[in-house]
Image (cartoon, rainbow, N blue to C red; front, side, top):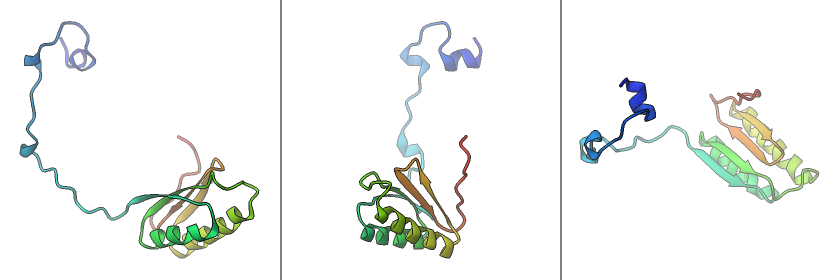
Length: 116
């Protein structure tokens, strides 16, 4: 039986002797501080953009939910312009995804415009 058969479960039955129990004490499970966080936000009014701007200035990537706003609402335009300004100032990027999310990135992070 080859390694792929073992991984994919092809043929034969398995017993508890086929598995090894791992002890987490044998591994380093401490997390290093990240240079950037992915932050989630909801925008329902103009002032909600302030927290997003602060997060981007701090170097975080923000995904903001704008489903509480109508696409024709002028608040969306004003918030988007504020976030575009922050992206320009921080040499980041901003995109509206499917009319329900705005993604804003800090310096060094660009958003691909083509789907995978």
